Length: 450
Image 1: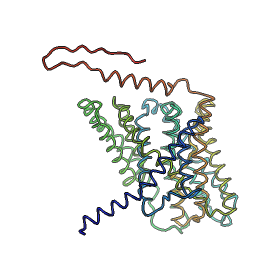
Image 2 (image 1 turned 120 degrees about the vertical axis):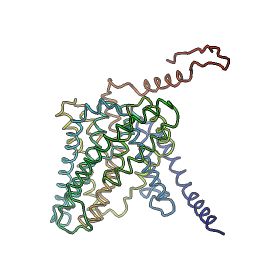
Image 3 (image 1 turned 90 degrees about the vertical axis):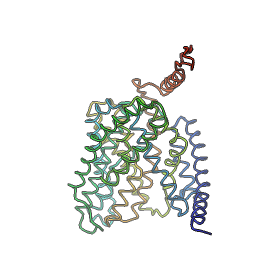
Image 4 (image 1 turned 135 degrees about the horizontal axis):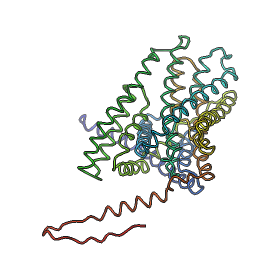
């Protein structure tokens, strides 16, 4: 058997091993998603519950850490969150985004430092390691700083309010507070008492990298927008445009993470913002959403549950995790919602902003992991982060549904109205005046779609 045959055989074995886990994830995620929708909840809640049931928390039939297929599932999930943020950028109202920009910055700042103070205080009060190290408590506070907005984005899309004033504020603030969280974490590790492992970049370099990325995004974005506008005029409503758009999304994500130390989702969102003013933006978003809904989305949201493992939690850690989770949820509402109210948002909109910023995800685990790697906190603290991710991922979509049921945003067209308009545009576009080969006019009867 030659080398190519061996390689082909190995590839088939790896593909075979991932098929069953993917089938289980798709089947249960869709089934529970439908149940959630029947119960008037966002489908994302059902998809996360599917991951909890399939993962080590309950039945443990899908192991996301498996050497056979775990890496493949994690990779699909990561692509899913990148595409979700790209889709959110495409669906952004740029004028509204610029209008809420200053408010979003203030909301992000409050949403970082109020949870940071709350988490630090809780860790200090519980007295782990005798409360002797201030930086140990500060790292746990930093875990609460960053928002994992992807779940909120999906919930708002399902509810039909992603393009609203509140939706744009949450999106902008979440991107900003991720950047602030990175800077704060670097600051804490750099100024710790020297027990960290490895070299860490100075705060000044991190700040310069962040500023350089956004400067590059603005400058390059202008050129890329013109290029896509030219392509749009040459090949309108063809699959060429979504394919190049996805390439741009992946390039920006890679550059943001690799060269500027910023989360890849920030790069994906920036790529979406660049293209959101195109006439074909809704067409691109539609094609991206098909991939998300059918494949990448269910895997990503189920992976939140699959990554959760509650085994090994001691009573002390369990008590700390419960209080830590409660403080995490409340401080985001107080910080983000309170700042939105100070910025003259209504009470209902302020509460929606606070609840929308509650979710924590992989960013919280990354911060905790960096603190463990640097030797600042004990690895047992990972067990306190998992319940936070589960609770916030399930609570935020449900509360948003309740809040919008009580206080609907009448300024935003309902999802049903927008779907009717989209169908009308699609059907109208199917009828075009044509000329037959003999040069005679062809009469086309156009109908209005109500």
